[in-house]
Image (cartoon, rainbow, N blue to C red; front, side):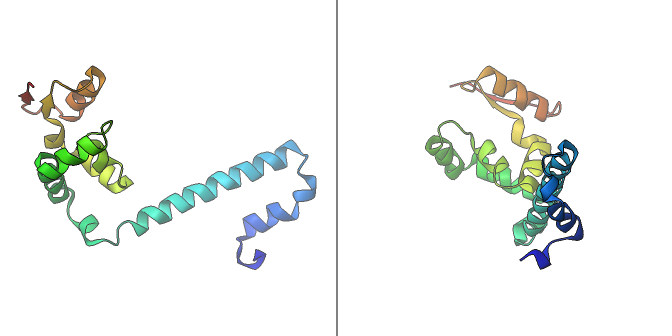
Length: 136
């Protein structure tokens, strides 16, 4: 199994006997963090395979709008009582989160049954767009 490891990892593992050396421990921790970042980047690349993720951000944002305003989006919000449909979309993957956060129409429809701090987030993300305010 070691034969598939990178040279940097092998070098650190070769020096494992000196693991009491604080500098070596720090190097191990730095390598672990670097590998975690690599894995995250690879997973992000993998997320681009589904066709929906190759849509232009503007189109994907419109798909999100339709979902949020649909009965499905409202039912998901009820199912996950602590999450709105917008939050569910934002939790799918990094790409969807970035598209959702930057798509101001998703955030310009305010409902006053939301917590005040969530309304502040929505106002910030609506980027000064005209607001559609819903009172229940």
